[in-house]
Length: 135
Image 1 (tube, one colour):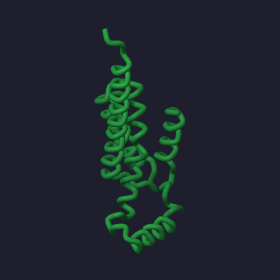
Image 2 (image 1 turned 180 degrees about the vertical axis):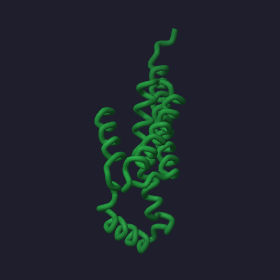
Image 3 (image 1 turned 120 degrees about the horizontal axis):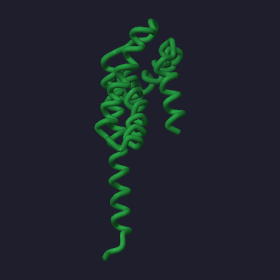
Image 4 (image 1 turned 90 degrees about the horizontal axis):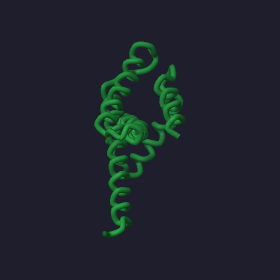
């Protein structure tokens, strides 16, 4: 599963054109419809893009933390990966837009993935402690 996720991440990150370019009209229509039905105006394209980047990087944080068993290192590697992706887009993909807000969103997603891993570890530890025989 982590390998499939990483392959998808690389494909999406280094796709030669923005991955949402064909979805623009549908997204605009959907956002207009949502706004007409009470969704606040701050839920706009930038909000959706930022949120998607957060969600996109959460598995990376989880998988790095689970594989390394070092949450701080996992978080740092996630920030580094995000920065390198944006740098690669800036240097080699003229149709892509490298932005600092993407680095922030990706890093936040990675940190949230690490946090989820820590919560899962805590829950498992508590369950094991309850099952341990009392001596």
